[in-house]
Length: 173
Image (cartoon, rainbow, N blue to C red):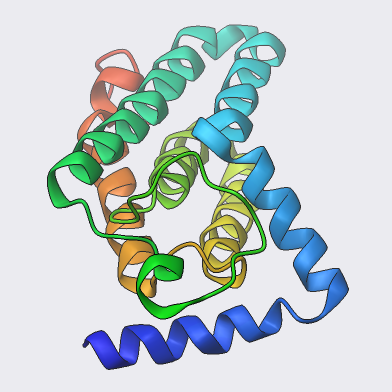
């Protein structure tokens, strides 16, 4: 598994040699730092969709909770980033030394599940952007594929677990 993780990371990191791909991956990484893109999207949804403002705010809270959970898991697992172990040259700076799970992937997946349930448009726009965010973390060379997969699973499970609360106790979104 370790060898496959490293080979896939190397292949995706090589995509960053293309200046356009590198610029897009950097932009996604920067916008997703500490879940900022997803928090802003949730707050914007709450502002625009006044009818479901509470659900948007609770979805934003779930996204933040998922992000915080991933940061807690990082402190327990303490897996070094690829640059520390394999000499991968990252395209971005990181705010921490630990890579498992990817907090960017966690907040992206939580937002995709939570906001996708609130707005049909969100179900079509947020998941592809969330997937791009996840892939960008490998392209910029700061996460292994297993970091991203674990982060996405944690985020999706967190948002799914809070779905009934997010929708005010209703099981239909």
